[in-house]
Image 1 (cartoon, rainbow, N blue to C red):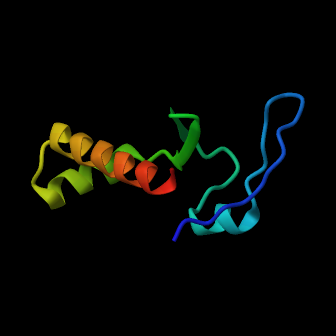
Image 2 (image 1 turned 45 degrees about the vertical axis):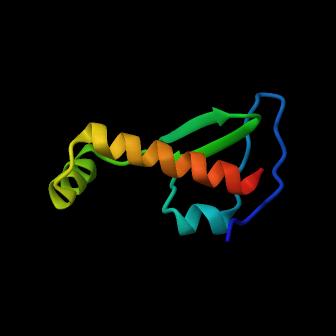
Image 3 (image 1 turned 30 degrees about the vertical axis):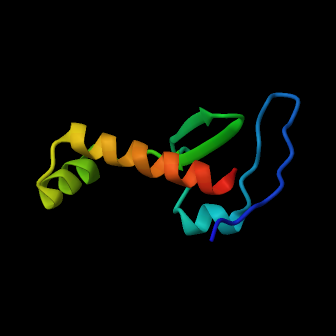
Length: 83
């Protein structure tokens, strides 16, 4: 089930992610994040290291294009659930 938190945007346009979320997703100082804007929503997730992504590709036996297509479909489904 999605967890919703309220954060405040600073004058510099920054937000602080709650510590529980940072711990759950292993987000540390200097972690890079992907930000996606879709239909009035902002989605964020940590950037995977290239070595992790290579391992995922090997394990699934799928091409990067297939994985991207599946991920986009999952994002669309999640967005539909939230709206």
